[in-house]
Length: 212
Image (cartoon, rainbow, N blue to C red; front, top):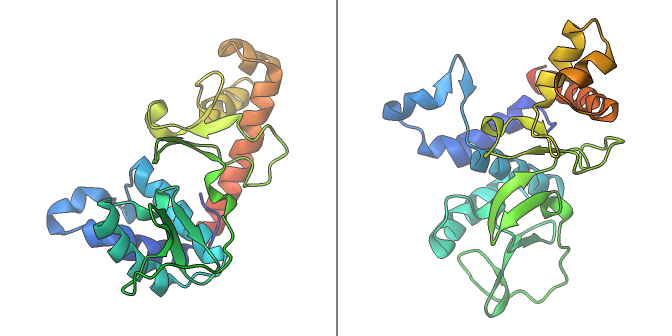
């Protein structure tokens, strides 16, 4: 769903998530797929965003090791304190902007705070909800669809109605592609069905790109 090629996705999973998968944790894999939590998904998404802004995967892997110990978390890249200047990754600490590396020196150079945290709702520093529509470039309200592990097992849902976008898409098809019928079935507006359809089309397009 993050919209990149599968080789990069698998490399990230193997380096960041795969390190936690052993023979006794085989239930995390099914028929060639990884089963990941919402926290894992956000971590992959954020790593991809850092990588797109110019941070090498080797730098991310090194930074992850140090940041996990320093901040006592399995998901350092989902923490809002992290920033990047396109080459190294930094975190906001009590003493300022600090380079998370062996040097642990205070960094004073100008950095760019990435926009990757804007589509994510946090409870303090823990991500709890993701709104992907805006960063996907869809022409809909950027917060009209979300992934929230408290609903539908983390599947994409209409934020206002808590109805899965896939469910509305399937209802639209089952009703002979009748927008009104699909809307009445789930007591949502016609616009809500249109939003679900557009989101599902983009989701499937991105899935096809990853699997190609």
